[in-house]
Length: 266
Ligand code: SF4
Image 1 (cartoon, rainbow, N blue to C red):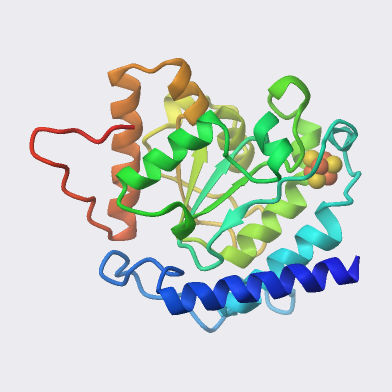
Image 2 (tube, protein in one colour):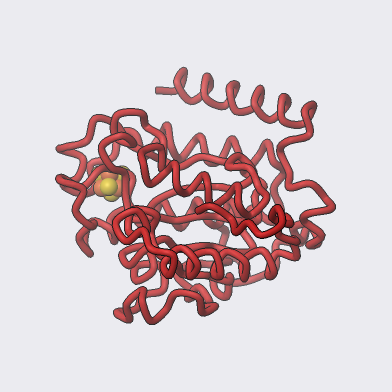
């Protein structure tokens, strides 16, 4: 187990170095004029220690995420979803991203590959991110639960609850400026609400204080890409695009100018 962790940390460090050399790790400064993470850790909750990403370097964040993934999530049996999984799907992306997408759980393709959002819904999410003028690797993508619910059903409340410790710690390490929740289960779980996505989408929310350091993070609920594929209408697509434009605005990023007379193709 330790060897696996070391290998993953080595791979993460290599990836980070490659990203540093190629200049692809961070959002380009001209597209991300927000100030960098505060270095003081915020001083919330006095003596209580938590993995506060705001005070961590990219390498430290990558290593902390890899440690949770390899040492805890991959062997997790905290809920019944462990019985049907091929492998866990922890999440992926830039450890320094200011923008995090959270869905409900892995599907068949994700269960097979161990990566989030790689099926048809993932292709659409990639198109959404591209339409924002970003690259998938500029963002971080994860789910409420790390194991595939059978038949692609929504995670049960107790499953999401059992898995929440991992998501909470991911978010504490990532310390994002904005979380985009994709669909009803992710939105209701993270916002601790029973209000549906149709009412909440497009309206800024604040993450409740579900753990130290997380209360108050901006949350934009929008439709899940799988729903958009099922309801592939101009109305649904334009609503999602409007939500994403609000996210860009909150991050201080100008959306790319579309070619004349052409709307973004979500
Ligand atoms: Fe553990 Fe989460 Fe998988 Fe349940 S879904 S077994 S809590 S990793």
